[in-house]
Length: 253
Image (tube, rainbow, N blue to C red; front, side, top):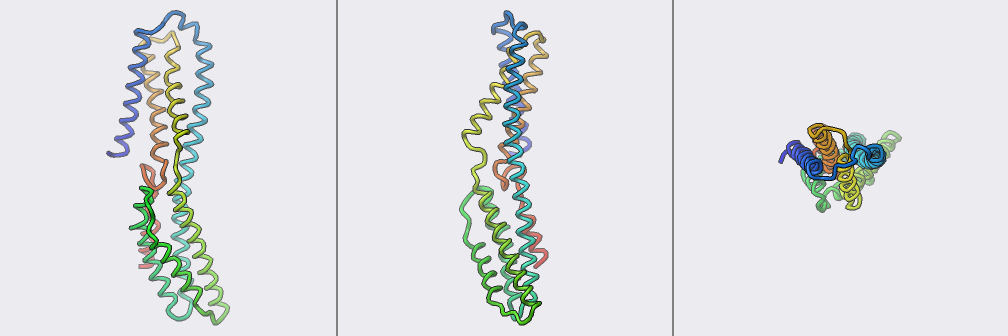
């Protein structure tokens, strides 16, 4: 199902459920002295709402930063791969062509084989590591005859090390568990309490009350859905795509 359609279903379902509960509470629940409790209920609502807002904001910001970091690391890895290839072109013999061929194969492996496994958190093939190690060994085996070639060899080595670091960060980020079960428990239970508390308030008309509780529930559901979609930076509505590596294939191909 489309990510936006799924989100709309979440929002409508939460709003409808809150409206039904609000109606039942107003229609059949305890009503005597409800207005007198507005001050006390308002203070509790403010405390619970504030704590819950801090929790939701912390989780959302953390996950959003994780997606941004994954995207930046993918472009850093791709840029370093191109830089290492260009530096290797200055090395003697067929080193430059070897590195270029392996770099193209590596970018293709990441885009076509590894990326689907990043999305479903499946096991990664060893192909990428093998290709990266072969590039490292090709650069290390090259013999530099002057300072220029020595500088290019050192540059290629440094860029390949950066590729390794960014690759390791990418794979580690894909295997991260996202939001744990304890945090989901706190988010969901806190959301339910936060949405139910307005039913303790008195003084509003039935229609206005239903609009308030359904709007509150819809907003909370929307935030929880955003958290759900951001758990894996390589899957979901805000997923990172392998555009950086297809760009490498266009540059080096």
